[in-house]
Length: 135
Image 1 (cartoon, rainbow, N blue to C red):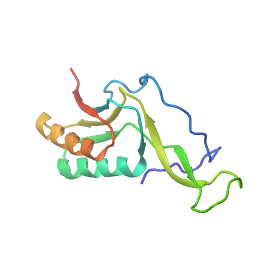
Image 2: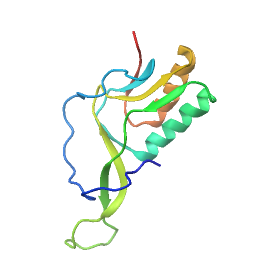
Image 3: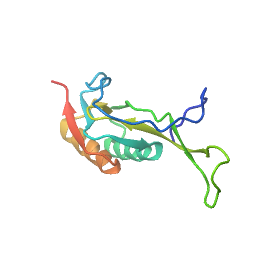
């Protein structure tokens, strides 16, 4: 699954996601894409599950670009750990997504196949999404 190799600061604060995306809001590489409509944390395992659905549907046709990468570490303290004792260890990585961000892009396939693949990927993600195509 997706996870950064090395980080300068391995434990981050939570932060707040608000507003709409300013970067990666238009298709750059492919002809078809999946655009987010919600704000949520997307885990690396959810991205991987969506990617597997797309590659299985395409059957070695076309090209896929993943436009998001989970690099925000989420920490977790074990059960029955008393208060204090510092921050817990990193359990997984997420990508905080905002509305308007392109998640996946496809090229080299027909529109019907792209719609089917991206619809299957959207079912694996915890957010509302929209199918977009280059004009």
